[in-house]
Image (cartoon, rainbow, N blue to C red; front, side, top):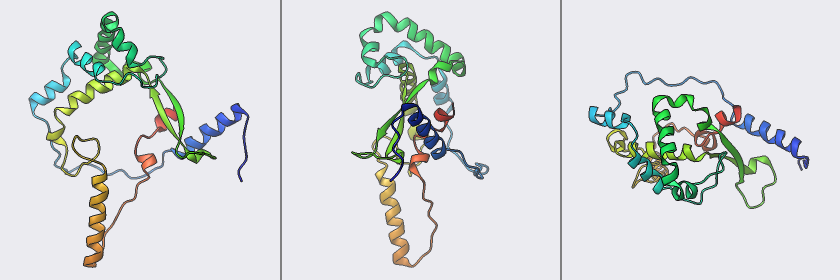
Length: 212
């Protein structure tokens, strides 16, 4: 049995310490891309990705977002944005103008609330929780607009073996392929090398959020 902590301040420190350690950076040798023949975009596609944001594409992104998402630090959701679009659209476009000029200077864009959600019905320790980031509404709008732009060029640069986050493909396909490869190795008596990743750290990592 572990120690049961009820004091909220102590519990907060324990939570922070646990996830800092869980997502801490480790030193390793990163592979280089030297010598790789990577796919590149045509000039017209690059220009389309870099063009100034239009009010039409911003509204399209807002219109296609769900209205019942949990709000972030700004306390707003898309229900508010949609209902008051005619009133706030100029302010929204001014924000996009600043983001286009130098998005790195908009520090408040990265403000988030980090919440813990249980992985199992009755969690009893910190390992039974997963942190999620509740970002602000404008962050979501920017992400959606950029996503819509990238969708137009994804097929030209994404390889056939990429399964996740691609329309008409499923991440489960990678699992099936891996099983088939292992099965062929076993049947043919061949050797091979596999890399097992910790998906909690490889995907949706909160290292930057926790450190900041």
